[in-house]
Length: 124
Image (cartoon, rainbow, N blue to C red):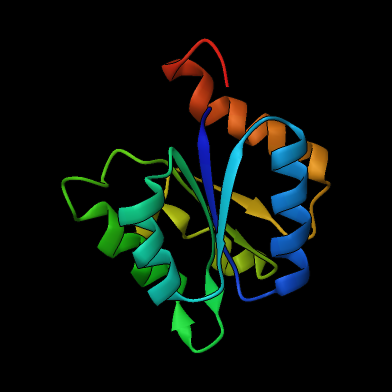
């Protein structure tokens, strides 16, 4: 089963994404801070990460750069999510693999997951 880590400071969004991904056959972990996300990288070992650019006082973009700079995590696709569409255009500057504008329909998530995980496996 493929594993997805969702990092966002919006608890309602974390809950919705967690339920949606589980319903669609994915193992999911959520984190509302950089510390929680960093811990999850080691223990959960995600295949894909959705990360908000703004994590309260933390910078999700910088956190993405840090993840991508580490050899053991550099190949994990990161999808930056944000309601700030101008900032989201800079996702490549953070080292992210793609971006998704908030608000989004949950059904759009499967398209994004498929785009990042299907080339590497034949199933979930």
